[in-house]
Length: 236
Length: 232
Image (cartoon, rainbow over all chains, first blue to last red):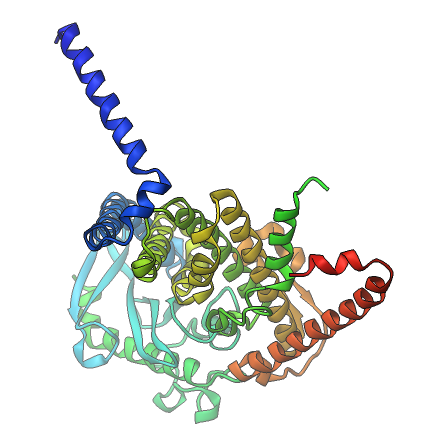
């Protein structure tokens, strides 16, 4: 495409005029005159709001995919933490089954179960669940269970518990959560699924009883959910 | 000195004389909420430092556009948008750091010190002064956060910078020290009341130092009265 030199010249002049206008308009002395005017104030507030929302909208849309990928990576990493690598050779993110979980009070009405398979046979399952009643909000966890109902591993994904007290449920801060490995509904009586203060098997923390208590109870309910669907899950 | 008088005054104000916590008594909500450990204080301090520099700069650039009648809603809008932007971008591009600092970023919105600096300084000063003020105020806040966090952590659990390697990476594991071995722990200091109590001690300490400095100044003033003019 070719432009007529005269047209380009005219456009350049126009741009220069606009630039000159904008420069004069942005002079502090001119703005000082405008500032008391109501219509200027309305325009400025609307302008700032518009720029802020456009900027946030664009950023949100352009990073949504990246954030989703990061979350998938996180999920994969957590799955790998609670299910030993020797137990599966499939992609657990693709091999899922949804089971109803409303009556177990673990946060969601439907739970997505990730299924670990070795040579086509189900070796373990893994799912996210929530203790909705932590000390300061929900505690989100993930748990791997082998096909016989023994816990392979539990991890806390996110929580809002008190830093320095309740956050010992994180594996990075304390090894408390590792004590669940190997436990199952069969080898530990229901009354023992509690913190020691309540006559159970698991430690509470100095200064934080509610956090571990509610975590233990949620893990127990998670195991019950598995037991109720065990046949369906391990014989797809 | 390579810094001019103005910059030196801004630096002294930000870090000591008019410190966000000690001088202005602002930002107590995020301060008391996160200073259970020195590491958390450091995380909050770093996040706040970045946002306060950006918000000061942004408000100073647009200061001629903002009519004084609607300055507060515009400041709030700018700060909230900025914090949300940092939150989203960090989640996408610095995800590992975000998992540790994410909690603190959202808390910055509750930090009235940002609004305070926007109102009292950035909206009236050229951009380079405003950026420098943001840096110095942020540093002053960071120092108080780490000091209060360290004091509470040592008295509550006998450790210092516990879990710093989670926040800063493995190479910072050397920061993690057990100050008092076999310490039984003093739970009160880790809870919110402990924050208030320890903060009171720190403020008293600052006042005592100021008093000592003032006494020394008086004795100098007798000899050379000109110096007294500096204090405005």
